[in-house]
Each structure stands twice: as C-alpha cells, then as structure tokens.
Length: 411
Image (cartoon, helix red, strand yellow):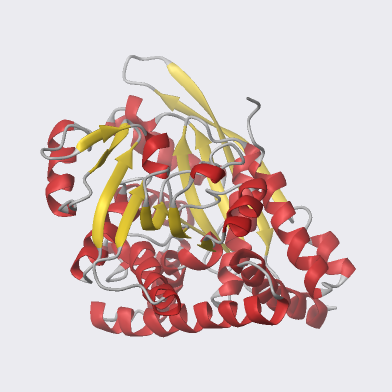
C-alpha cells in the first residue's frame, strides 16, 4: 500500500471547509503552500569516530496571526511532506483556539533510540546551529514533539543563547522549569484534550464510567489516561509501538506506566489481553483516543471502528476518506486542531512568561487553559449546527475565518 501523503490530506481538509464557508480565493491560494521551507543537513561526530549526516527540516507555514510556532520531531519516518502537514495543522490549531501565533514545524530523519546521549545532544545543538538566523522569540518558536523532550529543548536553548550571546528563553518552549519552562506544560496536551472530552461528554450525555481506549501510551496518551481515570472514566485499552492491551474491567494507567517503564512495552500487563495496534483501534468503547502518529485511521479500518466518538490527541491520525466513513456511521470526531491544542496554548503561556520574566503557578496556568479549550469547543460545535457539517470541517471554518481576517487586514 502506497504511503499516504499527510500534506495532501491536510489540504483536502481545508478544501472542504473553504467551499462551505466561501473562503476568499486569494487566502485559499496562499494557504495552499507554506511561506517558507528550510531543508538542511546536520553532521554529527559519532561515538565510534565516524561522522553521520542527518537530514533536517523546518517549515514556516503562515505567520499572518503572529510568529510561527511548532515542535521538532526526531523520527526515522520523518520527511518534508510530514513536516509541511504538521506546520499546516499548527497554523490552524493556533487559530482554532485564538492564540496570536502562526504555524511551523521541524524535524530530523533519525532514529533517536539508536543514538547515545552525547550523540543526541550533538544532533540537537547542530539542528539549532543550522537554524540560528531563522528562529527567534518574535520569528519562529520551536517546541518538543515526537521523541524530543524538555532536556533536548534545554540543549537547544543553550546553543541558541550561546550563538547570540544573551538570554533569550522565549526562543524555545517546553523547556525544563529551571530554564524558563511553564508549570503544567508537561501534561498540557492531555489536559486540553480532557477539557474537550468533558465538554463532548456533556453533548453526548455520557455517564460516569464511560469507556476509553487510548492508541499511543506516550507522554500525551499516558497523561490523558491518568487524568480521565481521576474524572471517573474507565480506560479499557492502551497501546504503544510494540502492541496493545485490553481489559474490559478497566486498567490502572499508573500501574501500566510502571510496567512499561520496567519492560519497555505495555504488553504482558497482568490481567490484560495482548492485542495488536490494529485491534486496539477497533475495540468497542465510548471514546477512542488516537494519541500516536498520523494516518492510523484510514479508509481500510474506519468501517471497523466501534467507538461512539473519537478525540484526536495525535496530529493527523485520520485520513479524509476515513473522515467521510466515520461521519456516515454517526461517529463524532473531535479534530486534532482543537483536541490537542492544549499543548500549544500552554507553550504560548510559556512565551508570555518568558517575555515578562514573571512565572505563574500550575493552578494559574490551568485556570487560563480551561476557558480557552471550553470556549473553542463550543464555538466549533456551534459551527457544526450552522453549517450542518462534521466537527473537523467546523473547526477549519472557525480557524480559517480568523486567518482570512488577518491576511485581508494586512492587504
């Protein structure tokens, strides 16, 4: 089966909304391609004395509403089309929740699990050296993504500040607290997803004990499992890159997390049945949460999904063809540009705190995050009624209108 081009999928998602809302044709044309693509190579001196060259990218999609913002992904399957799609989604994600930022994304084609800590640090610093003139607090602000973390962000910050000879903490978000990170940032993607899920549950009239399956038990997925459990939801299935587990009686996400930390996988967890990643996606449940990579729900498996609703904690997990099938089946899908926007929203809070050199408590961060997520959900829901469309199209209409207004105001 040929690889699905995520950038093509992203454009199809916008086309549907543009037609329904009557998006300005000039704005649509400008959004068909990124404003800027940066393609470069990072040499790393390996531990064995050899030198390896890694392919790297940064895409700055649109900055009509503010500086570009978006994560950096270290993954062996990363390529320019994936990074373009992710930068596109970031543009619309920021607009969906109304934060004054544009969209960007970066990536390196590498398997970071095969690098030593020293090699990983050299790659991280080399990535920033390659972008030294292209990023900045008022230009383009990177953050963590798949297989990058606060430690890597700290190395990148240190490299950037060393190159520029001054403190500029706002150039990177998702940093450790001691170097200007924000309280709550580590679990903010999941927390934002939970706020949206709670609003969805009200609309669907789901009762306490509603069942949840989470495909992808990484940082976002594991936090969402733990937070939802505290809210009275029952996690009945989770998975990681090696496979999944299911227990209709419920799973303790804290115990599963400890098991994964000690064994390297969620599989073989006591009392649960081992299943494949494909089987996790089709497990009967109230809410399915794809929280890993893009293109996991496709035309091939959409018909087998047995969830009542889907909340996209991952970026681009559902193809346009799958969207159509799910909508016809009556499955409500909360799209990524809304459901996982908690991460970029708290990243924005981090930038604000860096600029002021004044830091908020965890409670203050959450008190600011919740109304943004709740209000954004309700605005998107209102669009589904107004335009008689699915939630993804409604979210794109909501975001595209804001981008259109910014572009047209600039002339």
